[in-house]
View 1 (cartoon, rainbow, N blue to C red):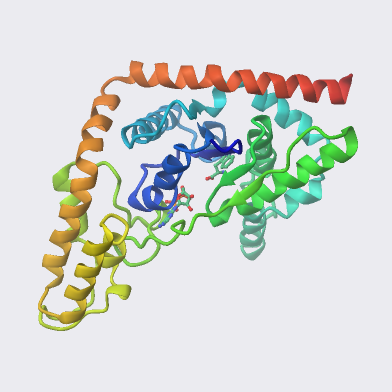
View 2: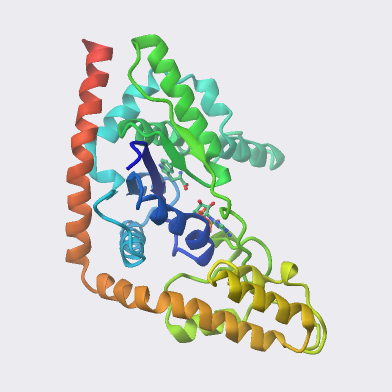
Length: 330
Ligand code: ADP
Ligand code: TRP
C-alpha cells in the first residue's frame, strides 16, 4: 500500500445528495481502499453557520451512516468527529501565531462577504464572526495535525488547502522542519453533476436528489428533472441532458453507450429515459440504503464506530501536539 496519507473533512450542513456522492464521497471511498485515509465530520466548521446543535448532530450521523453504508473500508479509513479531538483546538491556536492576518483577508469566502457588505453600504465585517474569519486556520490545523499528504476537496476549498500549505511553510521557516506540505486534489467528477433544474446540483439551489431517500421519493425526484420539449420521436443530445449526465456515473460502459444511442436515434421519450435512470440508480443504491436505514436506527453502533475512529486519530494528534509544543515552547 502506498504510504501517502489522505485526509478530508465533510461539513455536516445538509443531507448528502447525488452530486456529493459522485463528486466527493464515492471517490473518497475508493481512495480509502488504497491509502491510509482520515475522514472526519467537520462539525466545528459547521458552527459558524448552523446554530442548532440537534441539526449538526443529525447531519453528522447521516454522513457517518452514509459513508459506512456505501462500503467505506474502516481498516484503512479513520472515521471520526472533528470536535472529538482536543489537538485540533490546540493546534489551531498555535498556528494563529505564524498566520498573517493579511492571509485571512484574502480568503475567498471572507472576501465575498466583504464585497457583499460593501455593495449594501454596510460595515465590511457585518455578519462576519471570528469562526468564519479564522475558518482557514482551523482547516490548516485539521490538515497538519494528521500529517496529511493529499487532501481531496472541491474547487471552492482549494485555496484553503493552499493556505494550510503556506501556514505549514511559515511554521517550518520559523521553528524548523515540523510539518509536511499538503497538496489539494480535485477529482475529475467533482463539481460537475447537474441537479433537477440543469444547474450544478447544490444544496444552495434546492435542486438536489438526496443519496438515500425512499424508493418512491427517488422516483418522484427523478421524474421532476427538467427537460426540453422534444417529442419522443425526435433525436436528443445526450450531452445536454441531465438524465444522461446522471446515468453516466452509475452505469457500465456498454450500458452508457446503448443509452447514448437511444438518445441520438430518437423514439425514446423523456419519461422512458427517466424510468431507465431511476431503475439504474435504484439498483445501485437499494442495498446500501437498507444498511443506511439500519445504521440510522442504531445510533449506538454509529457512536461506537466514531469513538473508535477518534481513539485512532487521537494517537497521531497527540504526537503532533507534542512535536509542536516542543518546537514552540521548548
Ligand atoms: P453543496 O453545493 O450542495 O453545498 P458542498 O459544498 O457541501 O455541496 O460539497 C461537498 C462536496 O461535494 C465537495 O467536494 C463538492 O465539490 C462536491 N459536490 C457538490 N456538488 C457537486 C456536484 N453537483 N457535482 C459534483 N460534486 C459536487
Ligand atoms: N471546509 C471544508 C468544506 O466546507 C470541510 C473541511 C474542514 C475540510 N476541514 C477540512 C476539507 C480539512 C479538507 C480538509 O467542505
